[in-house]
Image (tube, rainbow, N blue to C red; front, top):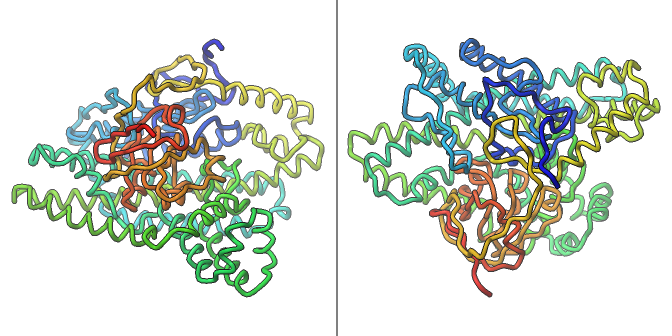
Amino acid sequence: MANLKEPFCSWDSTIDERYNDYTTGNTDEVLPGITRPLPADLIREWNYQWLVVGTRELQIEDLVPIPDKPGPTMLPVVGGQFCVNISIVNALTSSFETGGSADYLKQFFEVDEEVTAEVAQDTSRAEAVQERLMARFVRARELVDADAERAKAHYTATLARDWPAVDDAGLVAAIHETTDHIGDIFFTHYWCSSGGGLQTTLLDGLLSEHVPDHPAGWMTGLTSGLTDVESARPSKAIWDLSRLAIARPSLAEELAGTAVDGFEARLASPPNDDWAAFAREYAAFIADLGFRGQRETDPSCTTWNDSPQFVLSSLQADLPLGDEHSPYLREERSAADRVALEAEVEAALPEDQRPEFRRLLDLVQAMNGKRETTKASWTRLCRTYRQPILEAGRRLVQRGDIDDVEDVWFLRLVELPEALDGGLSAAELQDAIVERRHEYEVLHHYELPIIFQRPVEATPRETADAGGETSFEGIGVSPGQARGRARVVLSADGASEATILPGEILVAPVTDAPWTPLFLPAAGVVVETGGLLSHAATVAREYGIPAVTGIRGATDFIATGTMLSIDGSTGTVTIEEG
């Protein structure tokens, strides 16, 4: 296959020379692979919304002008996949950067190139922007929790709504209402993420200056065991379900051998008291976490509400585990280790630096922990697009305009109200769907560079080769050492049916919050993408599981069953013989 040249697909963002530095970085954590047209338009829409909100709130509209649609946002679409626009991130950072933390993106990405923002020219103005941000930083816990309640309320109302009774205009209005909610809440995610990265960089700098020979694991240890981290809740909740079952041996035995169809049937009509008790707890679990799912910011993808396959496979993996695998015990141990490390670090610092250490540490821990809550909030809201859009798809199928409800995801956002009004014929809609499906399929065979400017060429996807090497250096994101057989999980779909055996090392292209129940039986985690503050790294540290990111191509040259040893402090992964 030859390289693919731009324009790659009809729903890509256009090029804007003002903002022309991109990375595929760790965006696969949020939305892996190629995205269909309507979800891409929706995500682009709330990206514009939050940039409008953010630049207005920080009073920097003139410093970070927003390109006209469909120009790049912070998460633009290139080659059908989401990237991070480094130029926009750095433009935002430069509005308040006075020196010292301009390279904070290194906390999120595994790239080697410089991704440093320029220092602001107007120092007094930058300091004013800093003050506005700092006011949010110190109130992070309060503000993030308020947004979480808002997201839950909107999501719950959406699930309860009688969508067949809503008229066409009401469906479109509901979509726009969700966009407005996400626009507000993603601004919180932005400042929580950037603040976490900024303060982590400053804290790292303070330690490097005053204790230059400190151990490599200090920074990961200081951000471990934060407790009450949102992205750890799915694994805790599934663990709780497994313990409920274990207390009822016949139920546990039946659960261990049941397939998803039988599982659903027993939940719908419990055959005995044990199943009735389990069904009640499962219903509460779904009410709380049913919005989760693979590719979880893509509303076209199913959730745990829609299918229990991933939950069931994770539950079955937890059943044989002893209490030593409990996420609660692991979290407690990790928290105790962190508290001890905090005392060790503080004692190693000059006395006059200790107050600054404590100030930075509090900000780092607050924002890096609450960043997982903001991620869950806008993920939950992204899922609320699903109900009105599927109802629109059902109506278009009933009218004979499209062949299948799922075809609706190949329409463009501007086409949806016109299609519902009858302004587009069935032939026009179906021709567009066929053409876009073809684009979508072609794009799966190509990949973009990790860092690039546009126009860029996409190259054919190739299988990575270890080249005879047996030792690889990535990024140590969760301290500790582990040795075990590899369990390779290649995709989000594969994760839905994966069973990790106790002591195995999970090897994946990317992981996110819905994958984290797979962490409990695992001795360690190796991921191809992500940095110190990636979502998977945060959860691994909560449970004290050694983790290494940035091993590109790991799922190609490591096979299931391969013996590995990993060091989550140094970032080393070694393939052993036998």
